[in-house]
Every structure is written in C-alpha cells, then in structure tokens.
Image 1 (cartoon, one colour):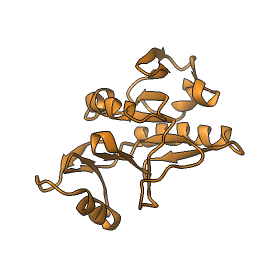
Image 2 (image 1 turned 45 degrees about the vertical axis):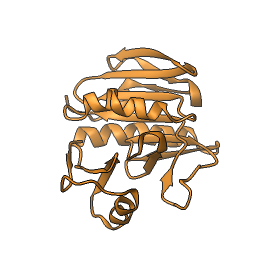
Image 3 (image 1 turned 90 degrees about the vertical axis):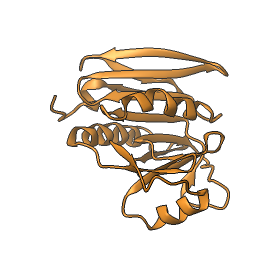
Length: 191
C-alpha cells in the first residue's frame, strides 16, 4: 500500500475520527497528520486473504478475533491510528473509550510489505506496535518473493527474530499455537 498526506495540515483526533467515519478511503493518523492509504496490488490482497483466512479458520471456536485491513487500531502512546493488514486479538476486545470501531489490544499483527511501506512497517510502525502491552508477535510478509520475517516477544524488552524463505518452509506462531506453510500464504501469488 502507498500513502500520501491529506491537505498538509494538522488535524485534531476528533477531526480525524469525524472525517474517517464519513470517508470513502481509509486514512492513517500520525501525530495530527492524516495519511491516505491507497489500495494494494492483487498479490498484496491474495497474501492478506490467504493468511487471514487460514488464521480465521484455525481459530474457530477459540477466544480470538481475526481482523483484516479495515479494522482501525489506536496506539495512544504514539498518537497513531492505523489499519494493520491482519490482526489477531484475544477476547475480549478492548475498544478505545467512547468508540465502537477502534480496537486497542492486538496480540498478533501481520503486514504485507510493499516497496513504498517496507521501511515504515519495519521501523516506525513496529516501534509503535511494541508500545502496546498486549502485542506479542509481528509477521512481515514480502509480496515480491516467498520471504517472511517474524518477531516474537520473549520478555518486556526483548524480541526474537526469525526469517523464513522458500515455499517449502513453515512458520509457527507461538501466541496462538498456529503453523502455516509459506506455500499456503503465497497460494496463487504471481512473482
């Protein structure tokens, strides 16, 4: 996904929320700036759907919710509203006070990397996600080759990093006891 700043001015949180509930497009809110989030590629969408669908099926009848793309996340310590590609939240949902459309307690987040968002997803966004006490795992999925980067929280200030390459490998997500082959994540993806 690519993004651009809307109207180059500072918005209050309330202005952002008022506009976002009426907007045709999604916007990220970063310290007063509204950033337009444009649509993804077919590969981006295939990967998103494959991963979220497998998670959703695997977590049936378990105390987890799986959300994709349109669920807004509030990160108060970073004054950031964002829309992760995939989120898993352990029930019950923690909603932003006074809101019914904004969650605050993801356990696992996955982002499908694009050339325009790769650095932001790996650096600033990951730092923001780490400020959430519920956040335990981060999965970065490359859309241009079968490559996944996986971070697992090991204690308050430590994260374990693993890389996975090739369609024949599998990734194990500890926080939800879930394993998936990269071949499944990349099903129908054209490199």
